[in-house]
Amino acid sequence: MSRFPLLSKEWCELVFEGRNKAYGAYVLRKEAGRRYRLVAIILGTMFLGLVGILVTLGYFYHRAVKEVVVELENVVKLKPMPTEKGFEIKRISAGRRAARVETTPGASMAAPEVVNRKTIAVPMGIDGPDDLRAIEREHLVDADPHHNADQLDLPVEGVQLTATEVVEEMPMFPGGIQALMRFLDENVYYSGSAQRRKVEGYAEVAFVVGIDGTISDIEMIKPIDTSLDRSVVNAVRRMPKWKPGRKGGLPTPVKVTIPVSFHLQ
Image (cartoon, rainbow, N blue to C red; front, side, top):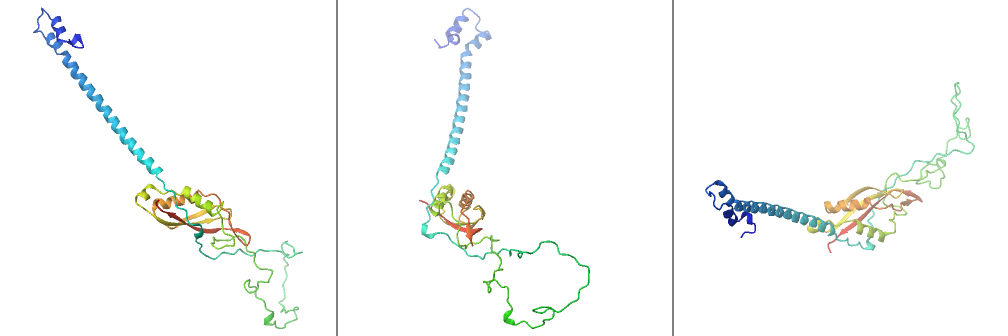
């Protein structure tokens, strides 16, 4: 007997026993089981095909995500630069501030009185209108700050107008050079694409440390690779405020150039 008695051949013969089997109902009943099995096979095949497609798509998606994660995790730490090499310093001239204006003790800042009258031109000498003695050349003093440094009316030098790279006190990263090396080691990433292409070497980045210690005017002096240059610039942008440089005891903007080393371990 079949697992489904109502679809078995024996049941069909029992139902149509003593009846006209040439009638169409007998043929339909006899072939019903085969039709049902064919429909079940088709539906099962479609279901298995759909499951296979979903499993294949899931496999390729998981593989793509895994490759991206591996590339992000495959970061090689930068080799610290030797401490004794230090920074590369380039010298440029510094600007000067305009002279400070001071008033003489007892002077008045009021507006001058306008007198509506004609004046007579009188030759003036050393000691007054009637003294026309010639002035000796050695008594002439040129107000030159370079050759008359002992004068008290020289301009007062203040905040620099342009960034300089040679000052009395250079800017300093919080914590010193070792802290700067650790910061670069943790924030400059060796991209997976650069590692696969075996890009190695040195890059140089320059930036200006302002009078408040902020970083500005970042530029790559010696680029090495597009992805690595972008990583260096992003790391410099994330730097905390530096201790500003000083010249003459006053904060001044200073341009700093530092090298960054990329070496595969």
